[in-house]
Structure formats: C-alpha cells, structure tokens
Length: 298
Image 1: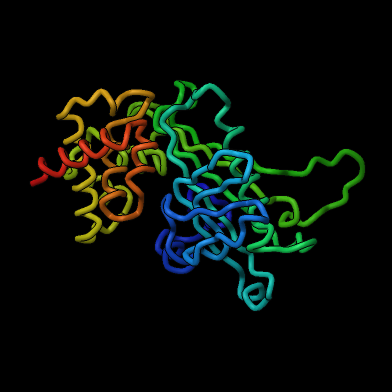
Image 2 (image 1 turned 30 degrees about the vertical axis):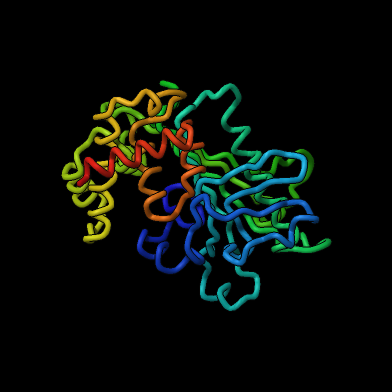
C-alpha cells in the first residue's frame, strides 16, 4: 500500500497497518453476487460491502485473491468531515505474464467490476457520489524481460481539450491498476518494494537469509509469529521441490506459490478446492501435496 497506493505514500508501514485498514482482509473466502436477484445471498462476513468473489447470473465466477477496505489518510480539517475517503483494494498474484490476453485489460476489468459491484452495498439509485475508489495491484513473479523490476500505475487523468476547467480529482480518479513486476537480483531497479517482494516470495532463499534481509534492509521486526510463518513458507516450498512434482510446474505455477497455497489452506484462509484450482491441480493432487509436505515438516 505504501509503495503502490498514492494516498499512503507519506505514511509509515506501521501507521498504515494500525490506522487505515478496515476489518480483516479476506483471502478467497467470501463471495458476492452482482445481480439484484442475488444480493440477498450476501454473507454477514462481508467487509463493509466488499467481497472476494464477484459473479453474475450469466458470467462465470470471478475470484479475487485478496480484497479489503481501507480509509484514506486525511488532514485534521478533513477528518471532521462526513466525506471520509474510503478505498477498496484488491491484490492479485500472477505467474503467467502473457496468458493469451493483455494482463492490464484483465486488471482494468477487475477494477470496473469492483466499482459496479458497489451498487447496492455502498450506494443506491443515483447516489453516485458515494462510489469508492478502487485499486487492483498485481504482483507478477515471472514477467517478460522488458518488464522485469518495474512498478507501473495506470490511472484516470483529465486531458484539457478546450479551456482550463478543473474538476476535483476525487470525482474522476476512481480506479487505478498497479503492476509490480519482479526481476533478477542483478538487474536494474532491484530495490525497494521490488526487492522486498522478491525476497519474501522466493522459493530458493533459506528462511534465515530471508529473515536477515527483511530485518536489516527493510526494518521488518520479526516477531515470533512472523518468523514462524516465513520459516513455514520456506519449508513448504522446499518440500514441494523435493518431491519434484510436475503438477507444481505446469502452466507457470511456481513451487513457492504452491507452498503459500498450502499454508493458506492450513490457516483456514482458503478452501482446498479453490487452492487446487489456483494451483492448476485436481483436488486429489493438491491433497497429496499437503500430506507430503506435512510429513516432511514432522
């Protein structure tokens, strides 16, 4: 959020985590239906009207990896106002950078769906002033060479064709797509959020190395819980690699991602069926991966 969402660029990471995220981010567990006929089916766990799954009666379901609401920082003067700016932020992990269509178009589609899905839960009839700004942030682990170690934001901005009329940015700047394209350590721009995410998501670095870099270079205080999670993620990744599973490599799915999916299932944040789908495996194949990595940890 600090590196990709303009509204938080001046905030510290701790400040963002403690003050501006509303509720607990949902990870692929809550669904909502866009159609009016399905709105009554919304579950009570929905975070202020936002959900991780978007579907209609005529389209197949669209799942969001992570989706949550956040409050934008305001000045002391604005804080007293009723017009508090709220954002809906979606984060996606993408291994296939060229899946047969432009990834940016898919990201813009996700933003459009997040805007239109606000009709009902957030605004009714012609209350368009209540529409919240949306961000869709894509972490691309295997981008094309020319995109490696790049951070790009696509937003709506005005173009003065005749005259100099000025509209408030909050009335048109309603969606932004951000692509975080990771790359090799010896490449240009390998620093900041690009290095942070590459180290965190690496399936080849040892847990001790990750811990050292995150603490010394990024000031991440390794609590006992966080250190345990990093170690578990590394062990899972190494366990899957040791099995040499062909399923873990097909269609661009990385070993590290398989390990993270296993951990999400174990934590209760992701259903096994959904994890198997994201891993491009059958439910039975994914179950075997979970069993094998569990045995190796013991």
